[in-house]
Length: 111
Image (cartoon, rainbow, N blue to C red):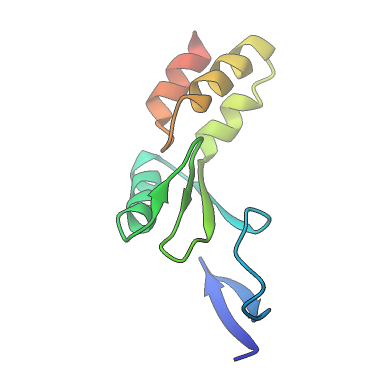
């Protein structure tokens, strides 16, 4: 197959077969914005628990080597907090995580 059409979370995508010389790399990834910890956990488990592997800061790879970043909306809000000190605390907390823990991010944000 030269091309394949598929959807990810309702978003239409087109994959192009570049041949055996083209390998997966970090230049292409999916980012999933999640509403809460339950949704974050569900997507994380679907990827990591199905033959994938964890990485840092909400990143993981599926069993085919595609990269995903599971990003709670709360994390994005925390690291863009108008208070630079709160944003820095949230960012530093995220840097210590694999799967994002929203409660820990919020606690760090509050100081």
